[in-house]
Amino acid sequence: MTETTTAESAAPGAPAHHEHPSDWEYIKVAIFLAIVTAAEVGLYYVEGLDRHIILLLLCAMMVVKFAVVVMWFMHLRFDSKIFRRFFVTGVLLAFGVYLIVLTTFHVWSRPGEHTPVTPRFPTTTTARPG
Amino acid sequence: VHVVLGILMLMSLFMLSLKGRIPDDRSEVIELGGLYWHFVDVVWIIIFTLVYLVP
Image (cartoon, chains in turn orange, yellow):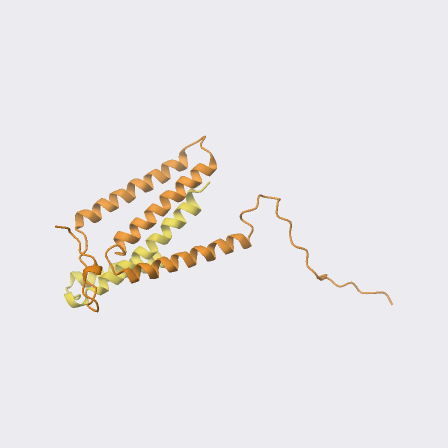
């Protein structure tokens, strides 16, 4: 017998009924998150590792932690699928906006690579003689 | 501001539940408070990595 029942097994039209995991499962999730956070902080002090590898590892751990918190502590794993779809849509939209903002500020170009756009019209007017 | 608001919400819920002012039929109040707190939590997961840890 499983500890949880998902909302998908409920009859159509019936209110979503779900049971939450046991307290021990929440404690196990919290311990896992603490271990991943410790690994993140430990990685910060590692020397001699390529910057890109550190960035990749940190982002991977960030995504794992995000997913675990959302699935367990925000109950998306045990709720109706419609909530999951709402959440994923919002996250994807926010991620897209974030990428657009980063691109607008030329985060992807190396220092000195970006040449500022010259304005089409002169911004200062000089007085003509006569 | 979000963290302070979350702490205030959690403390209020804790005090109300100690006094028995949250009956079973209003248990969604606890759930909503928890959802807000974990929303702040997931935002901080990203901020902590991108602002404090990324070299």
